[in-house]
Length: 155
Image 1 (tube, rainbow, N blue to C red):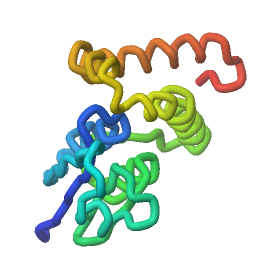
Image 2 (tube, rainbow, N blue to C red; image 1 turned 45 degrees about the horizontal axis):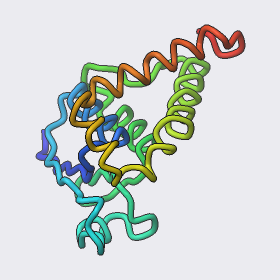
Image 3 (spheres, rainbow, N blue to C red; image 1 turned 135 degrees about the vertical axis):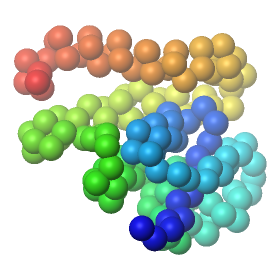
Image 4 (tube, rainbow, N blue to C red; image 1 turned 90 degrees about the vertical axis):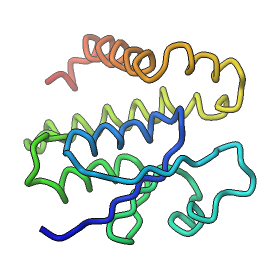
C-alpha cells in the first residue's frame, strides 16, 4: 500500500474539527493535525493556501489536495477509506439522507449559534470545564429529544 499524506487543519473547541478527528480515528487513518488559532489575525498561511475561498476550518488535505466543509469531508473519509473498518454513514440511501439531515441540523441550530461566542471567556470556561464530552452529551440529548417529537424522521 502506498504512503498517504493526510493533514487536518482544525481548531481547539470546534465541534466541526472534532467530528473529523473522531472519523479519522474510527477509520484508523494516521494524520497530522494543525491547530489553527481562530483568534489570530491574519489567518495562517497554511489555512489561506488550503481554503482560500472561505478561509475557515476544518480542512482535510489528502495527498496535497484540500477538501473543505466538515460534512463534505466526513463523506469523503467514509468513501475514500471504505476498505477500513468503521462505517461512518449508513449504507441505505434513506438512512444516509436522515443522517445528513440531522448532521446539518446540528451544524445550523446548535454549532453555528455558538460560533460568534467562540472568543467569549464564558464559552472558553464552558469548554474547559465540560470538554468535548460535555458538548457531545448535549448534542445527543438534543437529538434524542427531537427524534422523539418527529414522526417523519424516525428510523
